[in-house]
Length: 372
Image (cartoon, rainbow, N blue to C red; front, side, top):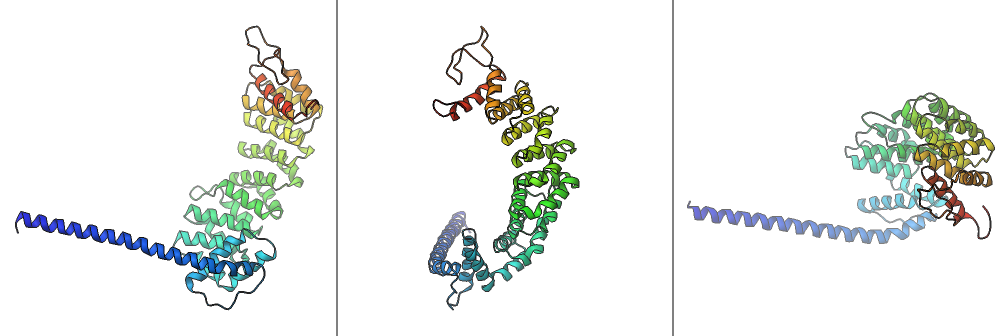
């Protein structure tokens, strides 16, 4: 075969391949468009049925195809996040009646990570207690998103028996769980998990203690103040101590004040910074608190100085008086700047910036013509 003939054949083959590729692309788009229209029509038809089901009305005896049933299950899961009470229970019954829960339980062990995650999501939203152990098994899944979905779903199930299983896997070197996801799941489970969290805080692995300290503060576990205070002072992990100091502020108990005041003298900057902020949140204006925060404002670390000044601003009149006592007259080398009260007679350098900002906040919050 001549060179010219070979080139003609090659060009023809390339042309056919291009046409076939273009046809395949067009065909795929057409198929997706048709599927999208079918799904849209099915959604419009199913939505009134789903709303009625959420209101407690039985579904009409209409045969649903496999695709429609899957769509109905997906829509019911979406609605579960929007309704409460009897409507939520009705949607859970609907999922059970349509075989959605049985199907999802089977998919917890599917080869597809997408299917495993979707199954955990559905079962968690449906509150399917029977699937708890199956979802807990996904905490060791090789896929990060599957593990994260499993944690969120266990939170939705609300069974405190899952707390130990979740905390045991926090900080896993090969298959870690996201810190924030775990904390929010524990908060979703609620006060029923406080005892388990206290057990972990008192003797669990370091990552688990970190999570426990954070979650206890968010769970309003006022009865746990003493245990959290011990962790804030004596735990051998700095992160646990910082999170415990923060938790004490969130809980707002006066019993935490002595621990926080002592933390203002700690060597670790982070301890002092968080302790100052927590004292401001608690709002105890006792003399010892005001004196300790006043000393902290004058320290060399910016974050400690700022937090202490803002804490004083939260302590009412005693804090305001302490802040104003820290304002220094300008030296001759400094340019005058307007103070929060509108005077040109004062300026701030170093820690004084923190004082200025705190006084400015007080001035902004002060009613016209009044005092803070």
